[in-house]
Image (cartoon, rainbow, N blue to C red; front, side, top):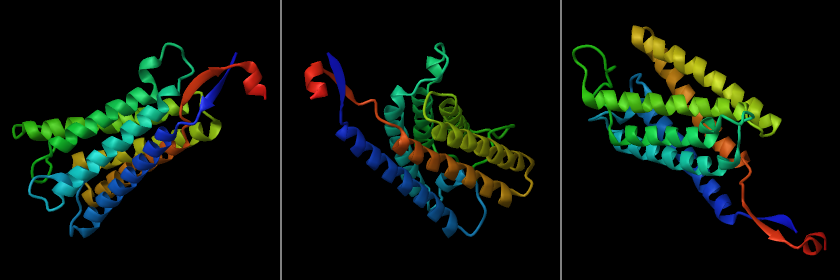
Amino acid sequence: MTSIRVPDRLGRLMTVLGALALAAALGIIWTARILLDRSVYVSALGAVEEPSARWFKYALIMIVFGGLVTAWRARGVRLRRWDAAILRPSALLGISSFGFFVASQEPCTSGCPIPVGETIRWQDLVHTSSAVLAFGAAAAAMLAVACSEVDRSLRLVSLAAASAVAVVAATGGVFSLLEFRTDLGSLMEFAAASIGVLWLMWFGIRTPSPGIVNPVPREAATA
């Protein structure tokens, strides 16, 4: 007996839909940013009373959908360490999608203030914590792919994306905390978010589906 891989047509369809959802989400986010006449960080697009709030919520939900589709496609990607199952890309992408879903359901208040000090608000704390979790898990997923058993091109691009997101997002975050050049800091955050979404699209398309394996007689397989 031997095995053949049955084409995963449903998986391919879901991959296309996930990629389209991610592309649409990125388009919505940048369109909303361009239409604003001031510099804002990404989450501020969905803040209460912002005209782009509803569309930003839709964009986050599209990212959740694309992330879950990619997580499902990547369920066969394993790290080189046998004891690192919890850090598989699929698990990390699932955590990231959960964070983005919570952030989509709990937008920050007007201006998206940093939830620290005496003026802290529960709504801002939930949104910011969820967004940080989502970004962190996504970056960790990139590193996990870079340390996995996939082909070399996937590992190298994932490592480059993780490094870029970490550096750009961290710099933008520091600018925000220091209230220094927030125009540049916000642009960095948009750039980091764009890199993450584009990587998710690319990884989802490039990742081979585990598919369905059916045993067949050796004679049929060699016929």
